[in-house]
Each structure stands twice: as structure tokens, then as C-alpha cells.
Length: 133
Ligand code: HEC
Ligand code: HEC
Ligand code: HEC
Image 1 (cartoon, rainbow, N blue to C red):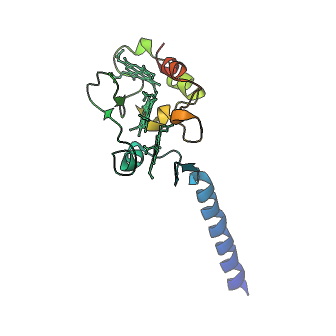
Image 2 (spheres, rainbow, N blue to C red):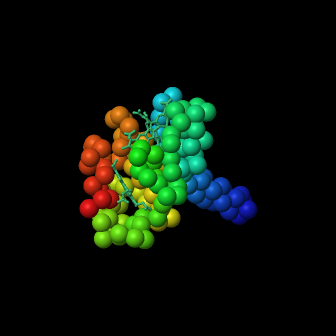
């Protein structure tokens, strides 16, 4: 009896824990016909956005010229000219997510926003000035 009770407590704990894990990581979202992790890494996004399952995205990780390519995996705030960039605290408060102190796809895109381009803010000009001050 004691064993069973412990076993069921363990089972309950397991369910609660896995339930919690699921809750924490289950930020899944419907995305153009797929159910995916809404806060996936750049690699997750690029697993489709390399032209395989979705439009290929040009991105840039070194010496970006910003003529259109997305700069990703660049440090935020950047090491030089940091006075021209808002603090991490301020950008986070506006919905921009910085991961491992770097810019990633979900810094600019919020897949839970159903509007065109799924941006983290209402419109593109407003997006730029979240970081560029
Ligand atoms: C399972 C595949 C898949 C994954 C993973 C994925 N996408 Fe997409 N995404 C699509 C498809 C399909 C479209 C529709 C347009 C197309 O074919 O490119 C799309 C469209 C988009 C669009 C354009 C929406 C518009 O209004 O034009 C953005 C922005 C986008 N995805 C961002 C992301 C980001 C950021 C991630 C990672 C967090 C991501 N996607 C992960 C498949 C995927
Ligand atoms: C610095 C902000 C920023 C980052 C970082 C960023 N994006 Fe974007 N993305 C935008 C903006 C703004 C647009 C809409 C206008 C445009 O295409 O320039 C866009 C458009 C897109 C589109 C639609 C393109 C089209 O032609 O329809 C896709 C898909 C996309 N992004 C995916 C990604 C993925 C995947 C990553 C990570 C590898 C990423 N983005 C990183 C800002 C960003
Ligand atoms: C998440 C923060 C963030 C957002 C949002 C963002 N940028 Fe940037 N941007 C940066 C960082 C960081 C750099 C410097 C990158 C480096 O050198 O590592 C940069 C550099 C640039 C540069 C190069 C010029 C310079 O001063 O070095 C241009 C141009 C630029 N961004 C345009 C844009 C535009 C246009 C948008 C809106 C669509 C935008 N950025 C949105 C963070 C951001």
C-alpha cells in the first residue's frame, strides 16, 4: 500500500513536472500550415526558411551591410557605437527578445502576431527604433 501510494505520488509528480515542462515550452503556434515552436532558435526557423519548406531568407552573421539581409546572431548591444542602441532592458520591455546576448529571428518576429510579417511591434519603422536610438 505504501509503495503504491509513493508510486502514485511519483506518477503524479511526473505528470505535474512534465505538464509544467509542456506548459513552459508548449508555446506552439499555427504558422502557415505548420504547428511550430513560437520562440524557436534561428536554426529552427532556417530549417524551413532556407527554401526547403518556406521562402528562403537572406541573413547575415558577419560584417553585415544591412542592404536587406537580416543580421542575426550579432551581439546586442553591439560592442561599438553602443550609445546608439537602446539598453537590453528597454528593448525587452518593447517585446524584442535577445537570446544569449544576441539578435535572433524572434528579436524582430513574434509568430503569435497574426499580422503580415509577424513583427514584434506594430509596424516596421517602429521596429527599427526599438533598438536604434
Ligand atoms: C515548418 C516550417 C516553418 C518553420 C519552422 C518556420 N516557418 Fe516561417 N513560414 C513558413 C511558411 C510555409 C511560410 C509561408 C510563406 C512561405 O512559404 O515562405 C512562412 C512565413 C513566414 C513569415 C512571413 C509571413 C508574412 O506575412 O509574409 C515570417 C516573418 C516567418 N515565417 C518567420 C518565421 C520565424 C521567425 C520562424 C522561427 C521562429 C519561422 N518562421 C519558422 C514555414 C515555417
Ligand atoms: C532586425 C530585425 C529582423 C530580424 C533579426 C529578422 N527579421 Fe525577418 N523580417 C524583418 C522585417 C522588418 C521584415 C519585413 C520587411 C522585409 O522583408 O524587410 C521581415 C521579413 C521576413 C520574412 C518575409 C520575407 C518575404 O519576402 O515575404 C521572413 C520569412 C522572415 N523575415 C524570416 C526571418 C527569419 C527566419 C529570421 C532569422 C534567420 C529573421 N527573419 C530575422 C525583420 C527581421
Ligand atoms: C534587435 C535590435 C535591432 C532591430 C530591431 C533593428 N536593428 Fe539594425 N542593427 C542592430 C545592431 C545590433 C546593429 C549593429 C550590428 C553589428 O555591427 O553587429 C544594427 C545595424 C544596422 C545598420 C547598419 C548601420 C550601423 O549603424 O551599423 C542598419 C542600416 C540597420 N541596422 C537598419 C535597421 C533597420 C532598417 C531596422 C528596422 C527594419 C533595424 N535595423 C532594426 C540592431 C537592431
